[in-house]
Image (cartoon, rainbow, N blue to C red; front, side, top):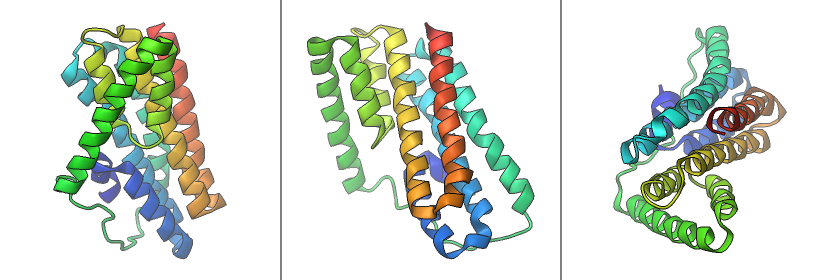
Length: 213
């Protein structure tokens, strides 16, 4: 439950905390991997919802890539859960209050910075600059670049580029979390989490290319 609902706030926080737990609770590795994958999988429908609320025209373009990435993440989680559901590891929630003023201010600053860079890079380098920003921004946060691209797509950015950028950011973020799980949680966690997230990222990029372009 922490993994599933934690993904609504911060799948990165869940990944970091559960990967650390895997170092000392190896027996519960599959269950912790389940929590991480559920958190990471939740990011994709959340991203679809956020982008579509700002620009409904993005829904159709993002639906298939988001569904593919979520499915490729949830399926391994379901497999691990069914194999380990009789075990009950105890762990405190890794999440803090996402509505705290400090957190909100940080996100607001990041959003403003990304929106500014997005417009600047579009002017300087065109669509390639926007996609490069999406990939780089996805390393740290998906929501800020999603909001920025969705807003830009209302007036100045073509829908296919906006959709591709959002998927690119989600794929970049997934690869970072997979690497985080591998480095912190060890080789076994890397296979259980890193490999599915890598496949999910690849599937999302392929699907957005075939579906949008």
